[in-house]
Length: 623
Image (cartoon, rainbow, N blue to C red; front, top):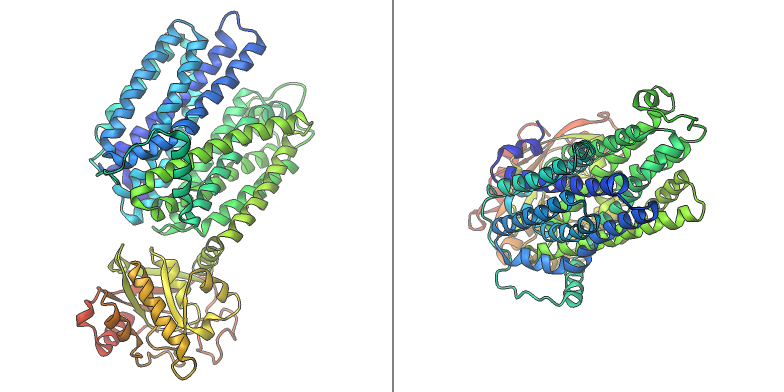
């Protein structure tokens, strides 16, 4: 069973999940019910008036994200989160009572106006929704929690859209009762959310919207990796809104399908998002693995391009139902592309949300999420404008999809050039999931926060990459400068901010600078890893440890965690056959290796002999 599903059994996650699930369902139940009412049931409204109201409704729902996100972020950082969520859900109940009256009195103007209030409530809920998870979940559960939230959100959106069609068929009283009851269920679920302390209780709330919007953008830009992750999420919403907006006409005019085929493909896209989210959790290995983001981006481009080439000569004189559509030979490829677009989106977006939560300043996390919401809304509006202008210029929907897929490739390349850590992590992930199968033992001994020194035996040129791919926290490696300068690996080491070091006889200035950088890293609560042997083993046995690690602990007395690598001796990157990398995959692909961590040692109890003995014990007889 996936860890994300197991989280549903925990009282610290289940009430929150049900609360956000009910909110996402109700938003779409109301919005789609409003659209159906205006388009099909409102008396005395022309087609032009209907189009105008529908577009105004969409704009009114998004507008609060621009207006009130800065205030919402401040409120979420200042106040205890469980109480704030209950107050926001009570506001939803009140808004839905007004919405119910609007349905009962057949008032399209009132329904549209209430949508602005719904957008305001969603704006208030957004920052507390995502900033809550780093407090309620363990660090290794962040990816699982985000996977479950993204899956639940898209499934709730889909079910809300479908349910609205059937519920409103029983009349306006039915939809009025449904939205109020769902809001009440959301409030009931929120009462189970455990108390979570305020991140910044001393914060003074400012209602100067322009100034505070600039401030939250400045907060987001303090960590460029976080900011570019926000841009990546916003770009995903640009893509998602474009597909969802154009899908009905794509189905009708390009595929020759009816509205049930539209719902079928929308369901496939939503289920694909869920499957991608769970797959991301599985591939991440209980850590925030941003190396998966380039894979997701690649999928969004490739399957978007294939969607363009998989069309033409499809639409017949009669609209096809789901059964007839599936019976067409070309339809399976369409379905596959739609599903894989969703899967790619899930793989792409889950690590980005988890990264923002992990690396944001805890006292400003809600405001940074609020900045994310502002940019998301901006990109959604841009997606609508892009679709409108492109179609008005005579661009076909398949060609519009192709242009967007190529734009995605360009945007991804731009972001990955600005933040090469994404590509670096991808290379690390590929190494430990294609060349090796890695078993991990005792890694919980590495502290989740605060400084620490890791020591490990040195078997191969990729020891640092294997450790970086297994340990949840980013590691600053201290490595021999000649290894640091190896082609390809140098890109990874530089991107990971590794610290090159030389022997005192080779370059005493580099050595002193390395020790200074280690001290700076530990002062900033980072983890530093050193290979005390000072060189790769030439015979598989551990060499004596050099005294440099003791110098580090004397200068900065922090916990020391012993590690051992097993199974890398005899691999392509070791010196088992003379020169490393002289025999191509001597053990084949997916050979099994192990990373073992022992209990942390207090700096006053550490000596070179005791340290080496502990690493030898962890390594055992397997070289």
